[in-house]
Length: 435
Image: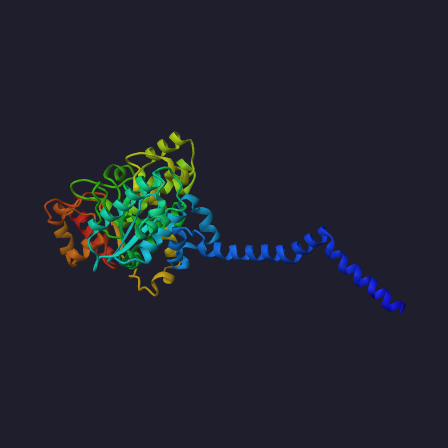
C-alpha cells in the first residue's frame, strides 16, 4: 500500500504542474515555439538561397572556363606583374576575347565595367549591330527613368535581365551613364592563335634582347597586344611595326625613320628600342604596371595622372583619371598585357597543340659604304624577295634601286652569305685602293 500511495502522490504532483502558467509557457517554448522558429529559419535559408541576388559578374565568370578567371600564376610572375583589384574583371574579359570568342562573335558590353556583357552576338545570324545598340540604349534609358521614379516593380523581362547585371554597380545614375557606354568588341581567338604561330619566328631573339637589358622576358608578350606580330601593322595614329613605335619615339630610341628606311618595321631592331623604352619607363615609375601603361599612353600623360590623383596605384588611376587621351585602350592596356602574358604561360591549355613557326635564321653585316640593292642581290646570287623578307625596314626607293642602301646600315643576310658578302667587299676595297 505504501508503494501505491507514493505512486499516486507522484502522479498528482505531475498533473498539478500543468496548472502552473510558467510551466505551460516553458512547454510551449521548448516543444512548440522553438521547433517552429527553427523550421521557419530553415525555410527562409532555403528561400533566400534560391532567390539570392547573384551578380551578373558571377554568371559572367561562371560562363567562362575556370582558367580564364582563376589563374594560378607562378609566384615570380604574380609578384612582378600584380593584378590590381580594379582590373580583375578586365583581365578576365580580355582573356575571354583572346581565347574563347571567334571573329564571328561580338560582345556587346559596358566599356567601364567589362563584366557587364549584355549579349554575345553571332555575326552570321544577328539582326544587325545598330539595331541591338538601339535596343539596349532604350532599355537602359527606361531603367533609369523607372529607378528614379521608383517604378522598378513594373520591369519587362528584358529590363529585369539587364537590371540584374548591375547588382554590383552602385554609382549614381548608373543606367543613364551606361546608356552612353555601350561598346562592341569582336572576338580575337583566330588572331591570337595566328600570333602564337608567328611569335615562334621572333621569340627566341626577343628573349635574348630583353635578357641583355635585364628585363623580364614576359614583356615580349607586348606585341600580342600591339600588333599580333603583324610586321605590316600601322595604326591610325601613325604607329608602325610589330612594336608599334611612333616616329618621334622611334628616333628617340635609335631607330632610323626617313625616306630610305623605316626601322620600326624591323622586328629585332625595334625590339631593342622597345627594351630600352620599357627599361627607361621602369626606372622612372618603379613598377611594371605603370611602366607598361606608359608604353601605350606615354610617360608624360601618366605622370600627369599621378600628379592629379596623388597616387601611383594603377587600379585607382584607371578608375578615377579623366582625360580625353586616356581612353578605353589606355585604361585597358595593362589588363590586355596581363591577359596575353597569362595565356602564353600555358597557351596549350587554351588552344591545344599549336605548331609555332621556326625561328628566323640570318647573319648580320654593317655596311661600310652605300650600295644599291640590285647590285647586292646580283653579287650574292639570291632572290630579292628573300633579302627583303629579312630586311622589312627598306623603303620603296631602295627596293627599286633608285637610291642606295645607306652607309652604316645593319643588313641581314641569309645564312651562309655573310662570308660571300665580306669577300666581295674586300675585293671592292682592294680594287679601289691606291697601288
